[in-house]
Image (tube, rainbow, N blue to C red; front, side):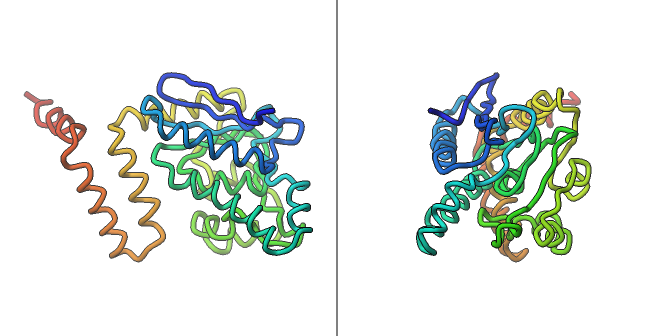
Length: 256
């Protein structure tokens, strides 16, 4: 039975993690299905942006499915690294480097892997009742889906370590103050706000959007000189495109 649903509106695909009875926990089948859906969406030229959310009102995702996790850990280090780390980091890396903008719509709690997906996505909107937490330490291990690396880069070392070392949740407003999400809105407005944000991006040329995403994602984790070279390389990709030509024509003729 599928645990991921897709719907389409205009040029935006909404992907919904659909395990509400399990707080949309990320079992291995769900992670693998998300990866397959993202591959299809990337190949669909009619899709310009993705909204990723969870079913119901209680949770975006409670993180890794503990049943799967416990079974893999019982199988030893090599199996745990293969099943948990490789799969989880693969998903968050895919979201982080996706060539189309991904807007996470956090419709409830985002714990563990759910928080790590939010960290990896370029844009995020949260419902006002959403909460975020890094509870992995209560199970005796650090975040395994990339959260020990992305969160400090996103919110700063000390603020990240407070979340990681305590496991305590933060509310949506605090998450916005930290820079974990872009906006907080009433729950009933969440998907409309996510669609609005996506629409404000996809009104621009697709190549330019991809170039901006790639330049920032790649450049933020390297020394500034290397980052500037990354920026230059993506600028070069856009120079011969019709998007640039049309943009310049509009600018140069707007006052005539």
